[in-house]
Length: 169
Image (cartoon, rainbow, N blue to C red; front, side, top):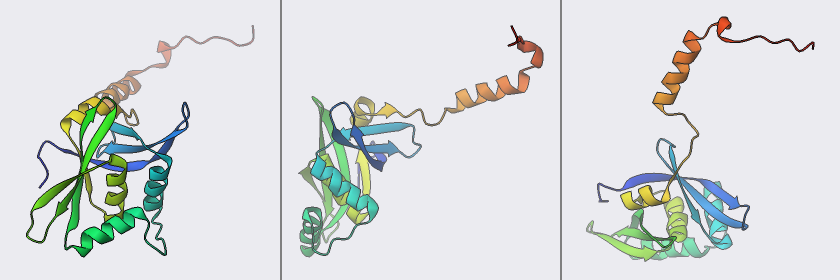
């Protein structure tokens, strides 16, 4: 099984960094409060986008071939881990499970691991280090404290709290 300190993430989609025209894959935590952007190559972005769209090629593409080879040996993809960040480079593993339940990590680029995980529908985990060093707040949803403060403000506001001005001047 995965290390208990790992955090499950979910692929939100592919985006384009307009500053340098590089694609990135965006992962979010379950609450969608933190995002992990990972810059990837164009070919990898296309492979991830195809998997997100459910595209099934007539003949196996590279990631499909890798999965076919893994499964032909009796192994299966158990989960993937993005386990380190060093000098703006992410390190990951595709964790395979053999026929007797042993887990075997295989070094991988995160983009390839994500493309494979989407094809086999397995979990994506990141280490606490990657979570703290690589994720950014999404600010899509206010936290409970902000929501409660706004609710209190709305409940206690009175018309006399506002100064009315005329626009007829």
